[in-house]
View 1 (cartoon, one colour):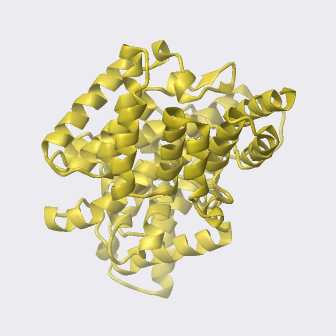
View 2: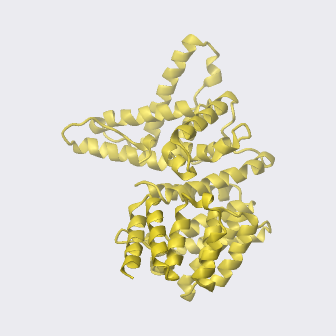
Length: 419
């Protein structure tokens, strides 16, 4: 569980009321972290202070809720307590640096008021402001809106937690110093920031794929944010494409594990997919295409749509997938796209052809990229190169961060060793 969602308690005799309070506080924090930070930091732009105040409010909940009862509106309770903490800190600061109090007035909007624009949208656009270094924008969104720790972000970016912490600290300081408004900007400014916002939401879903016990909840939050953005900005093809993409991916959530072991997409039971969500994703993708501005997320969503068709046709159209990956590589030649394209070529033209495509990727780029080594191991096994396949499986296992994926790869490796 990310550190800012962690709720600690002293070692005492087990208390059911304490356990219930801890579980409820952790649940609210996981489900509403970005929303709460957006509400708390909007008045004065101080994200770091909002994070500290929310952490203190969560600790206060563990002290109060076991005896006083869990409030009917836990979100509102946390916001009120956190605001009190922030006000106290502000008053202490005023004694040393007097400034007009009205400049830092705290809003009292009810966080459950549906008529107030969702604060997470404003927070996303704050993180994408030109005053924030481009390298810090997506990591900042991952932390402030979704609650990922610096260590988790560093793992995804193959960097050091200390460096990510410094990067995030500087970004938060700039938000406060520049008094960046916590709001969705007008259309002309909004379009310039949208690519960073969509990239961060996508990153939230992809990062959650590999991390921790709160993964499914974070993935749902990313799907929700993409849908919220598409609802608010329905005339941007890539926003619609992102929403469709995450909906297609999330529709398969219930089929990804079997007895705790990862199941590859091609082996998943399509009866376990959410076909209502797939239909909604397909409709949103068609709306995006009608706007006539193709982009990366639309192509990736189209790729997932082809996979979804297996539920109807009983087969995967590898030829259509290769055409889409060719288009994706021309538009956004990422390492993930290049690896997936090689896998598709392996299905169409044989393992040797897929391996040749993988060999075209510089080794320095893939040293810590788990999907590359898992794909390479599979293709090597298919081509009968068992020694090389076993080594690649070991490499992939060492780079896997979840037990279900490791168990799947260990099973595949054991089959190679038996041949």
